Image (cartoon, rainbow, N blue to C red; front, side):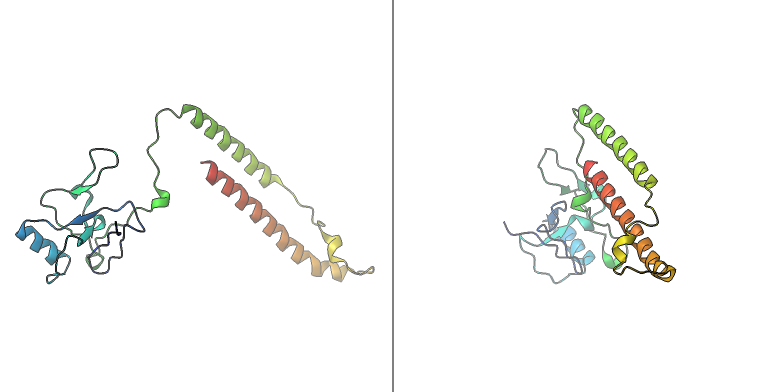
Length: 183
């Protein structure tokens, strides 16, 4: 099947890129169909079976959830699209990557393990916060000659401090990433 696209002007919704949206054909009732066309500002649109309006243009109370798993959402009887970018009443689409699935009831063991991992992560964060890097860390690699002066130390220390901050940021990034994938 080709992907559905929304016929509303300025709407770029496509089922190819967002599987959480639903797409709805125009009603067969002529008065209701005219109201849909007027609301979407496409009075002269030639309708086909592929002309659809996406669920972003309906209020949540106008959308009926499927009765069975894997079923389709439908619009309620008499529903009219009312949410548009030009009316400043639009609803943002749910982002597929951020949607949390419903939690099955039989995951008690996994929840305990997850709690243990969170405690371990917090302990690692505390340890990372307590890490101290001595001010002279890595100085030897900056000395390429045998004789150096206090002026040399003053030139090298800012670079060492910058590397210390960078190392600490990398450590926090890695710990944060581990925390995210274990959640």
